[in-house]
Image (cartoon, rainbow, N blue to C red):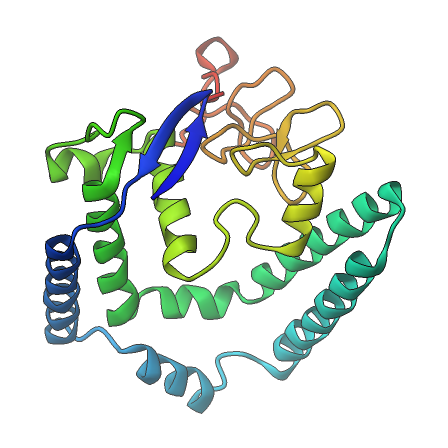
Amino acid sequence: MFDFTVRGKKYRLRNPLAKEYKEADLIYSEVFSKALRDGVMTSDEMRKLIKDRNLISKEEQDTIDKLEQQIVELEKQLTNEKEKEKKVEIAKSLMNTRFLRNIALSKTYNMLHNTAETLANAEKTKWMVFKTLVTEENKPLFVDYDEFSNASNEVVVAGLRHFSYIDAGMDSISPNVEDKVLREIGYLDTEGYLLNAEGRIVNEEGKLIDRLFRLVDADGFLVDESGTFIDANGVKVEAEKKVKGSF
């Protein structure tokens, strides 16, 4: 059982029942088999393709290796540092370096994201969260799977995130050492969002975002990377039609 909070309201991922594990495994098998029939590669096949065709250049791999080493060094520094201000500085640097590493890995991630295993596991995770996501009083949030699958509210997003970390054997609140440090000092809130000095939610680059991880301006309205107003679907809109982010 795992409790979490969204907008001050408590929710829970209850312990799955034995039959729900079996249902989830069946869904995984069905999606995996269909993906293979549709010609989707397995993860091993995709990794071999990446290697055989040199889809990741030597320069790209060198960048990844360098960032990985920086992460290891920053983790050691953070663990050994005692002064609060320096710990915050190192933690933010580590978070940013990890973010840059993830960007560098994004090409590989994107290719591996559409393998038979990842597609099957995504559906398995959705099913488990659909079954186990409840209110504080243990009442199911959804009774219809299609409704759940099409939902994009904060509670569903948070539930999927927490379950993915838990399923991987990680701390869903503070999966990385820098998260734990920033949380203890007050730069990470109880729902896992990174905060700036003013207590506003930001991403790893320090840009303002809402609770659905969408960019916003200083007044909380949705914007794209260039600062242009957009609607909830990412379509550019005029100032008079700007949309407030979710907070």
